[in-house]
Image (cartoon, rainbow, N blue to C red; front, side, top):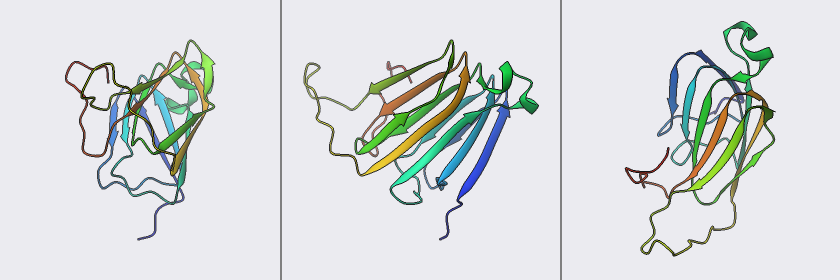
Length: 146
């Protein structure tokens, strides 16, 4: 099937979840103002070996000077997926969380060499980007921050 080259999702004060059998376009523009996005790329159809997420305004650009504003994006990736973050802005931050199940709590799990990559860019204001690494089919522990 032909996957879309570019798509745009925009929401004000809403929650959007993508994953499972959804198709990941080569370029996905996300607009947010008080929005919560969860994108689980592990079981999605990929357009190839890379994709781009571009963060930007929603609500007609009225929120926070045309930035991804007062919103958060949780990006769930497989261990073989590299995430490069170029998004920046005021009062915003990015967290990388490895939530793969370990047999022993002190045991570090090696990451395989990346076979796919996601590039995140754009402007953020009072926003958070969380990149959560999980194995395919694995769910995060109940007490974890997600």
